[in-house]
Image 1: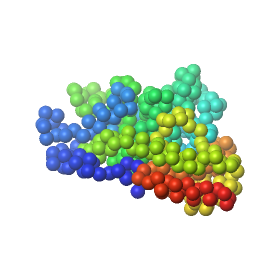
Image 2: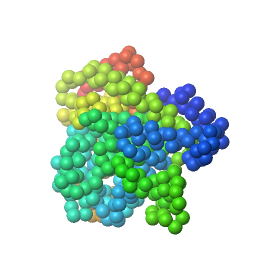
Image 3: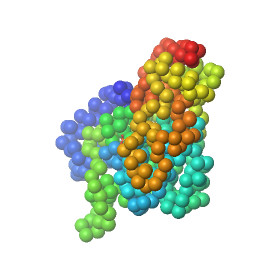
Image 4: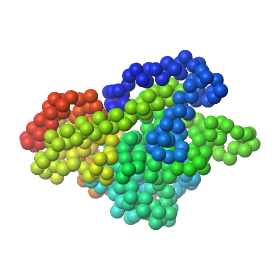
Length: 396
Ligand SMILES: *Cc1c(COP(=O)(O)O)cnc(C)c1O
């Protein structure tokens, strides 16, 4: 079982799903005056907007569609450039490519998130947006990013797919840029199997996103529309069963993140002080999700040995998250004249080759976090992993 939300599926989700099955309404649209209609998707959107601290939220079929819809809703045109980190899940790039924009990759820093100093170097006359990705639950340096965006007239859409529930300087991630995208797949903080969420800072962006996600309709398909639809949409809706599970999970999210943070701090203190090893930089020391503990070694050969001893791999070998391992994306980068071959982002390559992800709540070999603990681990289990880790370091 991969993400913390999956570990905590229980009676609450069951009740919400049964509510839907018994109502007879499976679509997100129903008769609001009929007391049998439980409008779980609608309720999820209301509660999520309030939770993140934004005026609007919209549920979508996936995190990938949430990002693509956000890019389109922001008015990005074919050929516009969007600056993104060279370390992220493949969906960040594919969402941009499917919106017919060009992903412009940028180095990361020791937070494993986009390096603001490198963003400045990648800005051209075609740059329209920055899409920071809050990797592994850790906030990007949003103050620096928002100030660069303001100075250069760029918009910001946050890829918060891995960081649902994380906070940056008192604000929930996703609420700082103009829009934010979240994922509800099984590896994420909370899950409904699949699904996504968009948050929007204005009514106009929300209406555009809604239309793109549902055949050009006005929010909730309300109002006189025929002859007045200005946007062509597709179908990225979710149904009430997905909404029901996501709603029950959302109501657990603060308990999930506080539990993860607590377990992470325990493990972190047990393995701190090892020579030649440090923890990644946190742009908000208490706000990250706590889903993973990321350690960076001074030397690559040592990182590789420790990884091997623990039955895992350094992060540069996590195939879905490292630009150099994405042959399908690289074809597009090549066509767009963007650097793409292995070695094109040397600072990112260097950091990732010395880095290990230890699971706290997300157990995912694809993220390079095949070892560690989970959200239900006891103090004894945390202690036992710390011992194994210290031993691996001592012998490597
Ligand atoms: C998971 C993820 C996505 C895509 O989410 P899906 O729901 O799987 O489509 C996008 N970006 C990042 C950084 C992710 O980790």
